[in-house]
Image 1 (cartoon, helix red, strand yellow):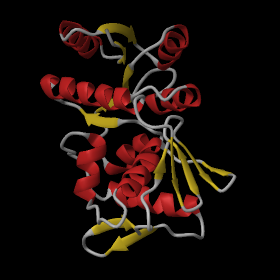
Image 2 (tube, helix red, strand yellow; image 1 turned 90 degrees about the vertical axis):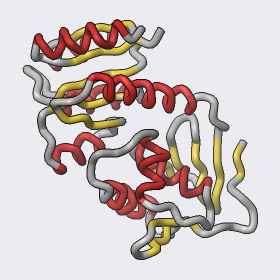
Image 3 (cartoon, rainbow, N blue to C red; image 1 turned 30 degrees about the vertical axis):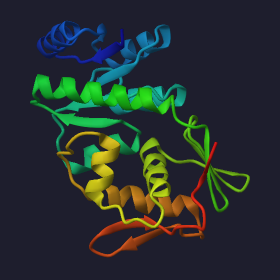
Image 4 (cartoon, rainbow, N blue to C red; image 1 turned 135 degrees about the horizontal axis):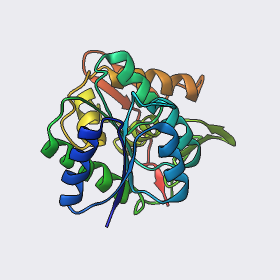
Length: 229
């Protein structure tokens, strides 16, 4: 049974989430502020965290930063802050999704299922992938250019991996959103452009990713597919 930590300071929303998610068959723990959330996270192992942003003591962004220093556990942010700037901030801090209030409980449950399924599938993937001088540690979500470790966010890593898995093929923003998010994305498609821009900057002078204007992105096809082992 998957265990979910719900971090929400509004008692009515907390109770609603607790009852609905428990009824769906998950084990649930609750926290009403950032300090309590981090304490419970350090004491127990969770499969997913539902994290409000506007929390007492430590806000959701601060909680997520601390979590990401320790763990790649899936995190879905729940918040009334629906502007693009806050969504991008949450995603850049390596949240797996960002859901604005009010939200549909059935839709939330399906997103939880999708995120947990994606997290589970990652553990069954091959260990490494190689392309030119890049090496991707598929389990550890690490990328090396030669011997140099390139620090990517999980989303940047997933986009790079997806492009490498489809060498020579143009992937549209919608292709990437549907594949990596596993469900319809209700935000701004241009978030992909932000991730691509950051990827190019981090990968350095060797620009592996080609922009096909008005269509999408691709990585040139080598004579052989990337080595996966």
